[in-house]
Image (tube, rainbow, N blue to C red; front, side, top):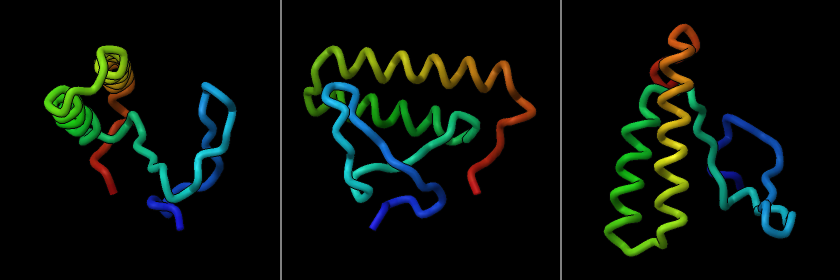
Length: 81
């Protein structure tokens, strides 16, 4: 059973092209106005539990990309439903 029944499809890992089981992934969209605060909480948690620097950098880069998307596309952004 997939965690997020709102979307469907397949997710693959970049490192080896293996399919990620549907019960291991969820989807958040950049237009979701709750996403940046969620990612910041995730970033802080990852830092607190000792995730490696590459993962931390990737989260920071994702936050920047989402913030840029939201700034450039305010008409597409909304509260989650």
